[in-house]
Image 1: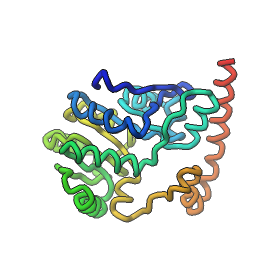
Image 2: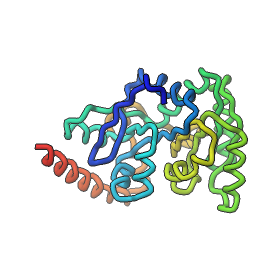
Image 3: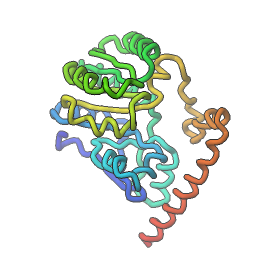
Image 4: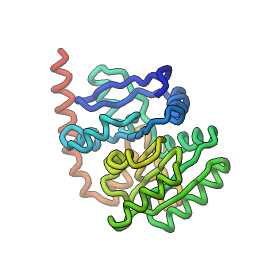
Length: 249
């Protein structure tokens, strides 16, 4: 990346993440597009932050990422508790919209990967309407047979997009991107689970008030109440924060 574009990287419970103000994002993306390198962006949830502590592949994925953007309110609270510089938390869908706007501004291209074929087709149509100057150079649905993967990767490499936007339907999500980015041409690679569901109208994006309060997952919890067991994850995270805070005293 351009040496003039500095990214402030901090650590929360030994997991790296980046402090990127909204007014810095365009210059960072512009530098990524210009330097002829391969750049993965990770939208880091609290679940993935904790996974990166003990899962070797996720740990490598985060460590090697060019940009690690926190999307969980608990991560920002953890940074505050540990007296680190506070990172900017982004709503995943809005981050993607901002990224697509930058890609369009600089006349670059995108490849869509993931979701079910009908939803992906609707997503592509809606993106063309919303970003008329954005070049969509290809798309491929997810949930494919393993035997197809080699041909899919070859098709993406031939299309040579500036951005690969991936969603549900890829095995291992962010880790799949990390494991395969060496097979792609230089550019930016991002996995965002809900992006195509929202683009296609299959799912609504969280309200701004729910997002800012940290309750954006509450409707999902009502539909799947067994996920309340994840409360133990927050307890574990709280214990880790206390331990790391005490170590600094």
